[in-house]
Length: 100
Figure 1: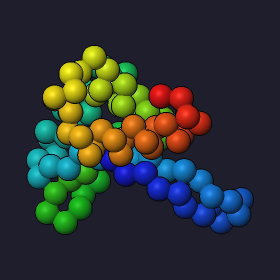
Figure 2 (figure 1 turned 90 degrees about the vertical axis):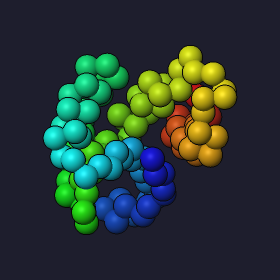
Figure 3 (figure 1 turned 135 degrees about the horizontal axis):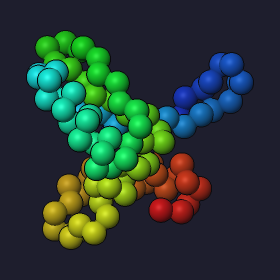
Figure 4 (figure 1 turned 30 degrees about the horizontal axis):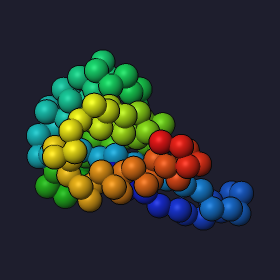
C-alpha cells in the first residue's frame, strides 16, 4: 500500500493517491488472485504489470478503500501487521476526511 500527495499539473492542485500492490514472480498466481478478489472483495480494477524480476497486481484509490474494510474488518488485533495497518488506516482516514 502506498499513499501520497502529488501535484496534479492539469489542475495545479495537490491530489491524493492510494495504491495497493501485490508483488509476485508468478503472473498466473496474480491473475488468479485478481479473479478471487473481484468476487470476494468486490473490487473492480486491478492491472498486472511487469517489473524487474516480478509482476505487480495494482489497484487504485476506490479499490484500495474497499480493501481496507476487506482486510481489516472483524480481525483481532494480534493478527494485524501493526505498521501496515496504521499506515493504511491513516491513508483511508485522510481520504475519507476523518471517517474510517
